Structure formats: structure tokens, C-alpha cells
Image 1 (cartoon, helix red, strand yellow):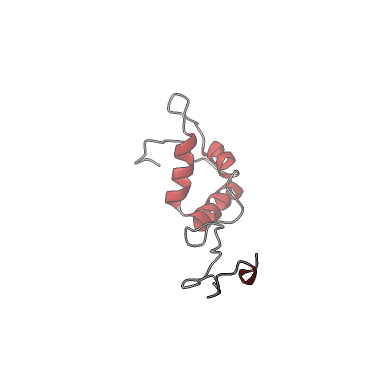
Image 2 (cartoon, rainbow, N blue to C red; image 1 turned 45 degrees about the horizontal axis):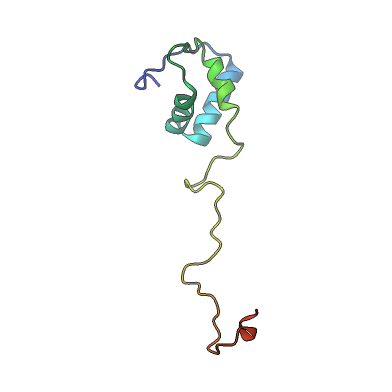
Length: 94
């Protein structure tokens, strides 16, 4: 966050530090900083990291496993739809 020019005070309770540790383990530091950067207002920067915890509370409960998020491929690789060699539309299911 310092490299991005976002400075805040980090006087947190043990429970708040535990939340920060759990969030960074789940999401990774880079992703947490990116999420904060989208909401950061340089004209009114927060003074405490407690504000960051409020912003991070808006994160989904599950982090994307491999960057694909909740996208599920509908077709396997190499899948091809069935096409009847006959030209009749009735034999193709229409």
C-alpha cells in the first residue's frame, strides 16, 4: 500500500489483526491492495486501517481459486455437437 501512496495507521486490536491475516491468506496482498485502490479517495484518505477492514468486508466469502472466479466451462475441450449426415431437420431434433 505504501508503494501505491496509500498510507494509514495500523493500530488494530488482536481480533482485527487476525482478520487482516486471514484476508491476506485468502485473497493475497496484491488483490487486497487493488480492491482498496478502487475505492481510495486521495482527497479524503482514511486515517485508520479499520476503514480498510470495512471495505474488505464487501469481498465475496470465497476467493477465486485460480483466477477464473465462478466461471464453469459448459463444454469440454474437443466437444462437437452431433450433426446427422442426413439433411432432414426432423432427424436433427427440430
